[in-house]
Amino acid sequence: MTKTAPKGRKKPAARYFERAAAVKTEDGEEKPSKPKRKHQRNFTGDFLKIQSQEKSKALKRKRLEATEKPKKQKIPQEVLEKYSRGEAVDSTGVRTRHFKEKHKRKEIYVEYATEQAARTELLLQETPGQLEADEEETTAEYRQAEIVANVDLQSAAKHFSLKLDFGPYTMRYTKNGRHLLLGGRRGHVAAFDWVTKKLHCEFNVMETVADVQWLHVPTMYAVAQKEWVYFYDKKGTELHCVKRLARVNRMDFLPYHFLLAAGNSAGYASWLDVSIGELVGNFNTGLGDIRHMRHNPGNGVLCIGGGKGVVSMWSPKVREPLAKLLCHPTAITALTVDPKGMHLVTAGLDRLVKVWDLRQLSDKPLAIFNLRLPANELEVSQRGMLALSQGTYLETYTDVLLGGGTGRKNMLPYLRQRCDAFVHTMRFCPYEDVLGVATANGFQSLLVPGCGEPNYDALEDNPFETSKQRREHEVHALLEKIPPELITLDPHEITGVDAPTLQEKIDAKRQLFYLKPPRININPRHKMKGRGGSAKAARNKQIVKDQQRKEFIAEVRKAKKDVIASHAEGGEETTGEKVKKPKAVRSVLDRFKPKPQKKQKSTN
Image 1 (cartoon, rainbow, N blue to C red):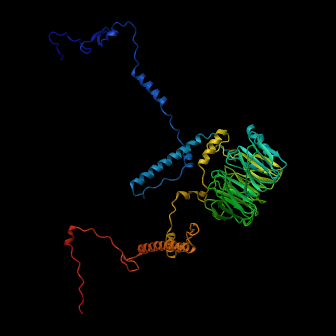
Image 2 (image 1 turned 90 degrees about the vertical axis):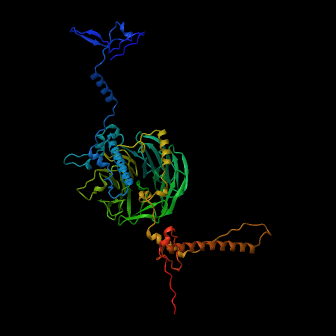
């Protein structure tokens, strides 16, 4: 029902649903249509047709697909098991709901971390590989010339040899495997980029060189000369002379602690903090001339081999060995620790090479290599390959834990190589399939396919770092430096709480009954002549001593009473004095309680 306009007023215009204009269709039928607006009534152009609803939905779908994040690729179960941290914690024994939820959240975080670690394998483009022999052939038959002829030009350029006249030589690679340092016994020192063959410096110190070692950056290195240890920079300029490190035979560097470890001919083990220039540890090990020394990359402990077949493990803050391991019945000729810090490899005059588990320190080796001659050098690669030398003869094995040796025909070596002179030092180059060998006549770079880690972490070790990245990495390493007090056999001890045992508590209580008053030393102030005599000073001394002794005795008596009171039974002390009980709270209803009966006096 529509409203009628009152008299005297104009009738309002009808709305579009009240009056509909008739529009003729193609069939001739008239259908109501919506009237046009005023500014559209006289429009003579063509109107654009609006897209159908289906087309607009298709456009929306395309936009959503373009903005949607790509779906994550499903991770294979084998890869997840590789990075798994074990089974989840069973929360059935947890009492409170709070800790149950805490365990659930922790398991979610661990699951996420495992998944992310497994996904990183998609970014690892390089894959490790080894030589595979054809039928009726072995990889030990292949020579370096054949390997070089069948690899690419870039890898073939990594095989070279240097003939030098100031040997025998020692050598070291940097932590990222880019630079090489050589030191000759007759004073020759050279540092260069072995990939591009660019020489940094070369000089002769004009005295005996026992060992060389890179420091925390590839622009500084240490040289153990005849008397003392000298520091040089990349250009060969002498930076410092450490006279407290005298007659050093072996050196090693702990990169996360900034410690230069050294062992000298008198049996002293020393640790020099290169960031502050102080000795954090220096004491006699009692092992005599130290010739075999390596540090454990897992916990920073220094492993030193002795002439009695014993490997002792040392920390800079403990003057006694943390552990001793009897490895051979004869003298030790070589030792090394794998880069993960889990296995110790030793060689002795008994012509055996043994692999030990550093996590358990058991008396049984994990693997044994039987050799024809005693091994004089040992080295383990990042992929777990073992290289050993017997004079001028080299052998490499694919796995440390498999065992083998020339004494076993069924466990042949992976590669063999004959050098032109006696081998004095061997090192695997990090992140490269290269074994560096320093001999009496120079240096050789050998190709060992599959020995190096193919993928590197650029935030940890970057072989292609620039000078700016090197400076930033040095600053971060200094900020994250680990103090020497944390060098222990078990690096996870710091996460635990050092709670005293029951025996320690009992011993501490017993010591209270046998304490003696401490000695009191008094240094009186010097007075002017006539102000005080010797008798007066002696009397004042005695007064102060008596007062402090009385205070000490009172504290001991109080402690003894507390100990006796805590162990007293029946609420009474052994002295017969009653222990004061706390007073009960009085109430209004106490008057209804029965009164205690009084004891009747006996009348005799």
